[in-house]
Length: 284
Image (tube, rainbow, N blue to C red):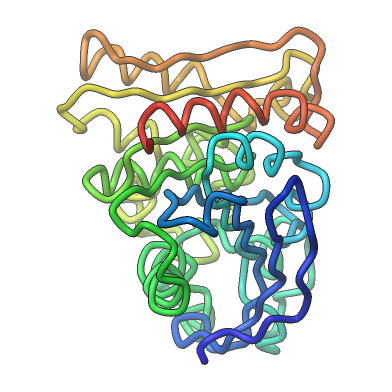
């Protein structure tokens, strides 16, 4: 068995499994949540990966995001991974909330000592899906979607843009859209890649990636106008939309600025149904 099932919780007619496993890419034990909708009892179901934001784990959205409600209705499994390795005992990994533990930024670090386990890109794109599909044959590996919040929205957009043939749908809540031009992204990329590796920075920046995407897009992005991080210039969704429009002309990016909503799970839970329905259009 690849996974140890820590708990099984009934939710909206399906089952939420709390899992953990030894991951090679992150060099540690990783915890996650997997929601299996009631339809999984009768055959294969598509899979939506939800990537969490800074300081979060795989528990936050599973408990507060209300994804299971629509996932149960649509017949979609939801995977809630963690946001970083934990307990690697790398000097400095617990010094700040926006770098290191809880802040893996969904990249593969190339700068020491972070190469020892901060390989969240490989974990999310390769190792975790392969392990899940091996142990849970009810998951349809040919029908995958990806979404996420904040740092996880950055992860969802960049992973989709780098792997468009792997994921059939993509959406994001308040994503960090242009990390090379915001404080969060600059701190993370300087730490994981090095200040002199600007080309590597651009490889994990959605606004840079979309400039050379060269195919139609179908993306849903929600941002709250009351989001303090949006007001501080950490998210920069307009930069992404502008780059997408210039690159694809008819970009297919739906950016919804939601009046008064902040950066919290009150915001995510309000629009969770919309994002699951968005995924369902492409996965079912």
